[in-house]
Image (cartoon, rainbow, N blue to C red):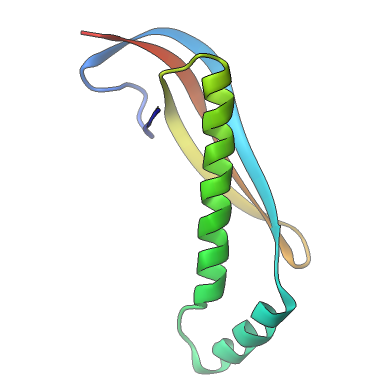
Length: 106
């Protein structure tokens, strides 16, 4: 499955737009991570446990979007965009969306 954040696939023709597909994950924080993150804010620097958590959530959201595109018979998803937001204290949402398309070689 090709995923791009542009509105075309170089060297291929879009023959059908199948619709918008998306994947989302709401991920909560871990008390142990929160404690260590709090300690890290004192000295500064990257909070790697949160970076890893968000990276895993982004991968899961992307997989869910790809699964939805495959169910439609798509060859690619174009105009892929990611977003995130805090949905409640201690939880964040990651969303990814794009347009599922069928392709033809040029």
